[in-house]
Image (tube, rainbow, N blue to C red):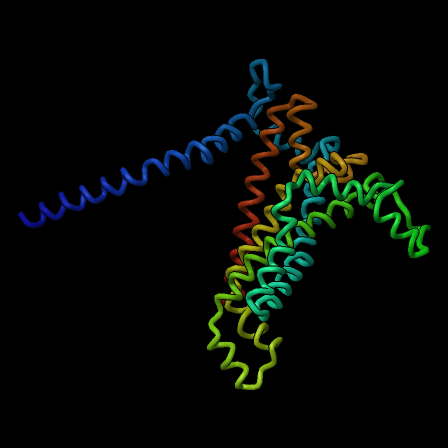
Length: 300
């Protein structure tokens, strides 16, 4: 009798939990899972977005990697180059700023945090237009600066040259999100116990040694999150590329997102566009899992 009462009570609790979770579950499925499922389904079709599509199986995926005119591998390479600079330039600089700001008095901390975080708050469209003015070959700040320091021979059409176009995108992208990662790491640095810092200082450690051997190991989970955000964000990058170069010149700065736009709205290849979106999802998940596994191995 007592067992049956317990079973009824557990069923009631389980039902109550299910009812409370149901709205969030429906939202999750409708916003995330359903669009992914539709993209996978559409990627199996040769479809122009208007007429009825033709089922072709995995032909779009094969073409994506074998058809040189689509240049998916070029776009992926550009995203990986951007990810490299994000991880090995942007994140170390953000970490350095977070460590330095963690030593200042609270009033100055707020001022510097506001300054470095400002680019994150500004619209990417505005930032893109700002850097277009900086790169302008006639009256841009960069070429004027080169003239002022007697280095006019280095003046360049920065976003219009295949050799410099990708670098012209990397610089503002790295600059824009330094403040974002700095704020994440700064929160972790501030969470480190002062007792641990003081104990290390009493043992003769310098401030940099405290940061290296005490603070950084403690905030590794936050660094891992920043690495995942930097890599997946680079794979999904779109707006600055669209504003600065539109994927040119000669598709030299094409990234998967601009290639996706090209397939959907210029070539009317909705099946191929869906294929690119599915590949982006797979790549983002794969890199997130690889980075998590790499950090777990280091911790072990």
